[in-house]
Image (tube, rainbow, N blue to C red; front, top):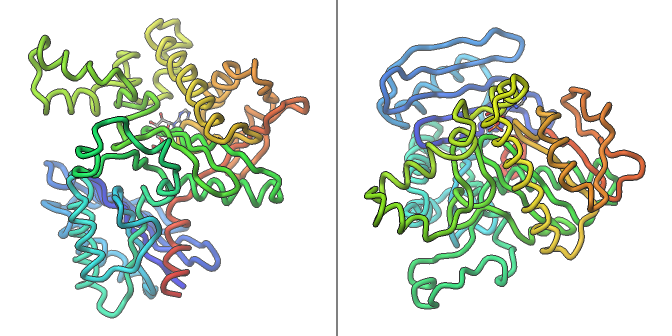
Length: 389
Ligand code: AMP
């Protein structure tokens, strides 16, 4: 079964066409700078070169039209379409087939993720027109986290406010954490029971997963909470917002922009949001870069302990996403912080580069440490097959 996976961001639209049975990817790409000057599509066919198509992309619907045109030249069928939706709110504890009703729900919960959900709903609508008779499936990033117990997902705010505005911990990266659990379960031959999944990319979150059930996660009402990220500040005292507004004179929109786009590793290092640049800077003796790395390791280890509390224990940790899969220095930094807990890695194994799931624990480590390349697109395609196949 060939599945087209669509991942629409606030100004981007990623796509991938794959055979879910063989896991062969036929083509993938990204429409970038949608609605901004200088938009283009980066397209890649397996076995071929990367192409850059400079086209005007005023909105997501236009981008989807181009994607359809490009993919139709491949001569492959599209048997089902999977859409990553950032915020499923209270409507998507699991993936659902697109109908007028479910598409309406994506728009209804959009105020919780306005930059993403409206664009995603537009793209779903467009796909129904472009691929008549082909089923579409909504895979919400928040779905996996819906099983988190109330003591962990509830905010201690007045009940009427919480109920009226649907305030709770929704989390994000759920599809990635679900994939990571699946890969860990398979790799360890079902011997992992209490997993802390560490999705460390430009966005970053941890998730406590006990026997496949999500028990807690570090992102909250929105993906701003929890870890320090590329440009997001992660958890700060909520009163910082009042202080910035009252004393600093910043507007709410300016604070939103500051906390989401000008903070995190970028702000601390003063150099870049990319951990590669920060590691280079630290190696050359830049103290701010070193502080960014130290803060990232410290916060990751600290939140690791929070996740362990959610399961009253931990037997396995998994590093994943851009930083988790590629940065041996960051993995070593996090594990050094956790040495007191009995976490030990084998330095040599930690330095090997590979695209496979692998175990980097030292033989006497009390917690098994794995690297798991995540594959959200494949996870989405599996859901499409289950619901439509
Ligand atoms: P993601 O959001 O999962 O695509 O991760 C993107 C981030 O991963 C980048 O911003 C980099 O900070 C980081 N990254 C990617 N490759 C490497 C690498 N080889 N070494 C260190 N960090 C990397």
